[in-house]
Length: 275
Image (cartoon, rainbow, N blue to C red; front, side, top):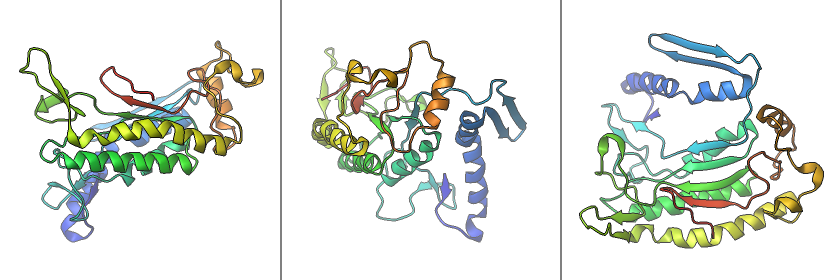
């Protein structure tokens, strides 16, 4: 989170957003994964833990990203630029913030997946199209820039029960008519663009990855050189230490969970599109 502006009128917002970011715990988690030391500070004290085995193992890192939070002087959610559109939750549509999140996560030097990315746009469904186009452009840019990003999961396929908002917020690419006994599902106009993205991205990413790796791309484990396979019994800790020393931007580090599997695209709610 961040204040809309800096200055005397926003000092209280600067303090609030700084505290909120600390309480959210991203930096505490990152420090633990890099060092094995977990320190979480909160208003009543702090929680601290040191892994006796040192740095823990990490086969891949999942990124849940929806938006950056921007607060105005009166604590209202807003955006930094008047032309930036907002989702129905009041968050700005800021695709580049996804790229920055990918860059932040890359410091672990392990494969990354965008596990959740989407938003509610029932008030103006054209904003859903802008969101999808913007987010997936950033995915393409990140891979081309050398980030080891291997997949993108959109949240979500169908309208879902969204915590304290219940069914009021419409995250789904498909509208779900809960009053219809057949559970009728209709693809929203603003979501249709994602079908073209999902059809094109895997082959585009394959070409980029082949040029980056300098070798043919395959999702066939048996096609890998024998010495590049991670033994099934290898520990996650040993794998992570080996991966940390791998050459930068080398896409095909062996993993206990994945062996050169193709760039994957998902729709949440137990449905996967891999085209």
